Length: 231
Image 1 (cartoon, one colour):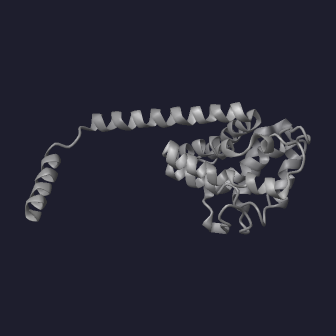
Image 2 (image 1 turned 180 degrees about the horizontal axis):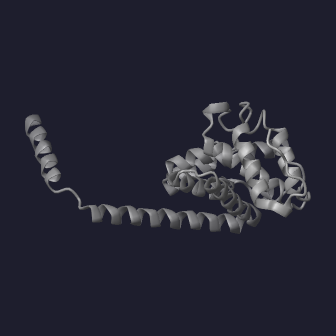
Image 3 (image 1 turned 90 degrees about the vertical axis):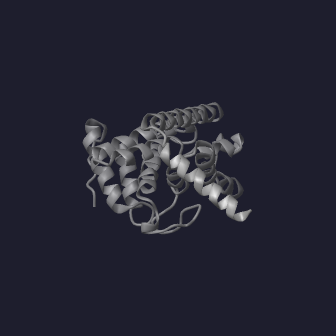
């Protein structure tokens, strides 16, 4: 009986090898898969907008900033595509964070901050298992890691952190600092760059940050009164 099963399995394998799927069918399948994934991403972003409009708008701005930076620095098309969806979904894990914490306009308690910190892992789970994008999920999971190893959720350090996560971290922080919140005014581009540069040794990748500063200086023109020099 075992021999029969083995022979039958071989027979089936050889049968399908003789009739491979045409390239056009494979292409259609991947196109449909892409459309389904894109639809899920848009629905998730819409749900995030309904829960917390600020966070959804922040994700959109970070996506545009990150993609613009990547194009300016001649990143590969595949890298830009990964970065695009990673940035748009980088805070999608906040769908699972209580709204009263997201909307709080005062300093968070230690318990509330511990809950907020879970959003990057939640985003990883959502992106990997609901959207079906594994690489993007890893980028999202580690966008709050720090080069000194004091970030979260995994405490990764230096080269252990994906370069796209490092870039996303910079874009995320820059947009947060230059956006108005109910509890604070936005920083100017100049002041935000100074703040980023002050954390180049412990929080951000110095090489990527220097490129980011060049990028902002070249794009902003009159928006920055005094151009910050990369170190």
